[in-house]
Length: 549
Ligand code: PEP
Ligand code: MG
Image (cartoon, rainbow, N blue to C red; front, side):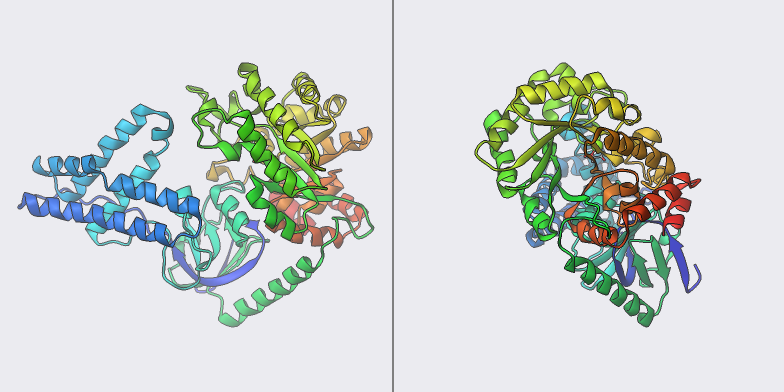
């Protein structure tokens, strides 16, 4: 890598930051087996390595500011502090293995047991692998794999970030994220948006940059300057801060420069996210992901429990609109109580609204809970279903919503078949909300979690925009709202394109909202339509971006 270079990737969270680059320490490779001279000394070494892992995880748990993160770390520490695990390690050493290989073998046995048990335990095998890597690193005197904790601000570089890596990422130290792979809907992207941290994914070459090199990250354009000088970095940060401050000072309802209204809404998972939505002056909630409340549940949440959870959000949003989505279980959001065991391809399986084919009572219970939760609160509740493919499904859902006494029923557009039939769907429902994360995945036959296919999942893909345009036009003709609530809505450069395609509301992570509001305020509705035309006609996503910018 030359001393000064520019790398480019996909910007997934706008903002500019600079700092020395540090990589996630690599997973240690196992050295060749070594003979064991003193069994007890070797057992002592192995046990000490496990204890070091427990101590490090406990220290991180104590320091974590988020209660869930602390809980996850303590649960991992507990797994490493297991008597049976130590016994297993001892047995392998007595059988002639050195400490490193005994630890590897003992964890492998646990891994097999967890996998055979299935369900929740099977999902913990990544934690086991992480613990083994940590213990091996400790034995070999290498840095613990995972996010560095240097005690000063830096830019974190990685191939991709796993949920474990991100669990206790300290926003006080990490100023920006850059990954070599990882798509716009990867964990890295989701985390970055939640933290409002500049981030670039799919940035080839970033792992060739030497640790400590000063890099300048622009999360809007996806550009990463390598080996920049301090003055350049400072000037770029200052300019970005000035425009962010200007964006934050705009507070009214979303509209273009000529007054064309575009509702700007927030995506939430619970009432905990409402203060951030308020801070961003969101006009309401455009996507309440109800499944996030119940991700760890072995049993279906009761009617009463659901009423309480939904009511909290409705009360906090009194006077505004809340678009609540019925449970979107399956594939990337498995709910243990609705587990579809043995599906060969869960993303193409019984997920979202399709679960009502087998478990209709789950949907009717949820709709009844939503209806009861809004009683006595002045809140405009709209209800929508995920993963709808046909008009028949949409009509049945709308009937169920109305039967529950709820006035507004809509569907998400996440499947190309639904986008193509938008006009027919709008004959049976009141509104559409386009889930671009899934619509990308199903349009391009590219798993949304597959970093290697990030270019296909880019929301600037002209074919995706064309499908959005079909929905926008259908909405215009029917005089009904068509929103976007996938990650595409959070991109300030793409927002005008979406509006030009006929989208009437944009729902996003609250932190993204001020920049989107400012972007729309700077263009007329005709400008938006012109930009939409350019983007749809472009040969690929990169060209679309370039033409619009
Ligand atoms: C989407 O698919 O774009 C969406 C908003 O739903 P989720 O990301 O929760 O699947
Ligand atoms: Mg979806």
